[in-house]
View 1 (tube, rainbow, N blue to C red):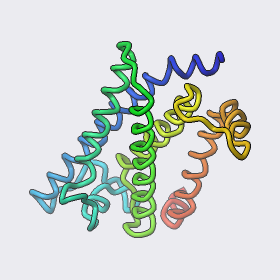
View 2: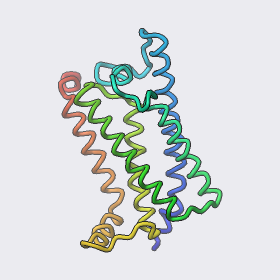
View 3: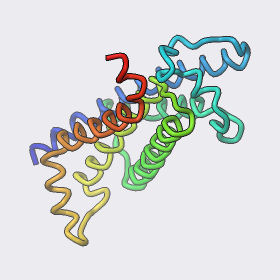
View 4: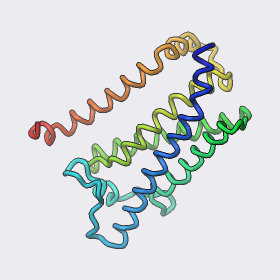
Length: 200
């Protein structure tokens, strides 16, 4: 119960901070996208080396939905995330239908974020630091969004012993999240070791 109450208190701050960080990253990506569209020789400030290169990611084909680049959708999504967090801090309450819709959206956001990460690794062969920032905060929001929903019975686990699995995950929530990021970082370092290995 104590852990549940702690998450209820902290979760609005998680949403607000994630919204601010994601909004800044999306705005920076949108600025670079527009700058490249107007001037093909424009070099984004986050082009640090052949691997860390926003320009390579931005210039890749197919990074649009209905003709709009992904970062523009990020601006809207993270603005909503910030609004929800601030609203909760101000005392707003949302019903179960709202939270279930929220869970659906952040789950789709997580899938989209990692799909783009896989594309960056295997197709573009470059990484965008702003995109990696979005991956990080999307993962954190997904993880604690589902925990918040399960803690508050917005979603109920009863079958196949999943409730016991969740109880274990709840006790080790931060450990699991840290291990997840270590695995992702190790995967990225292994894939791009051809570049970083010779620079150590």
